[in-house]
Image 1 (cartoon, rainbow, N blue to C red):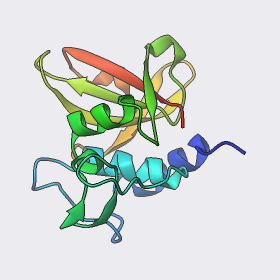
Image 2 (image 1 turned 120 degrees about the vertical axis):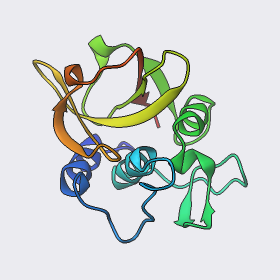
Image 3 (image 1 turned 180 degrees about the horizontal axis):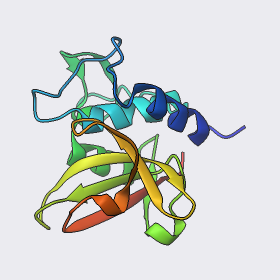
Length: 152
């Protein structure tokens, strides 16, 4: 049985896209809740917490969490840095539900994380900060985007 169940991550995204799970803090007023929400989705998909100090990926409370659980660039660095869980960069032709997309609005800094919830005729996403579910990726204005395919 695979470690990551993308269908469970997508189901979680649909359930919580316009709500806040009380088991997690809300970072909406602390720079945005998008990556926190994406990490919650990945957890719901079965990815294990990594409690490595500073460089891990975990959330216990607002005061006991890793930067990678809630920060866009930190999540990218963690997932692509060979940790567990992990991801590889993928192009949008290969994107599937349960993958992550990160957007850069200025072409320099990636500042928004989204979960892919559909990839049939067009890519649709769910996210927080600018709460959305089944929103077409094409409706966003951005300078750069990267896809992350969860590998473990």
